[in-house]
Length: 70
Image 1 (cartoon, helix red, strand yellow):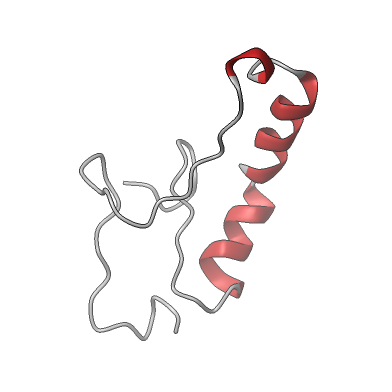
Image 2 (cartoon, rainbow, N blue to C red):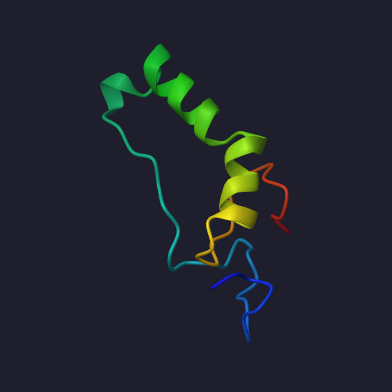
């Protein structure tokens, strides 16, 4: 299902709680180059475009700076 054909789409804002994926690591690795590279790659415009328009699952990219975040 895409968000365009959905009967209702929950607004994405600071009060949205359910269904948000979180990238987690250990405290000792949070500043590692590999983790920073992964987060930067995941939170890219290309991934946001795929999530928002091509995944076909009604998902929306919600990280800070993602195109559809309100």
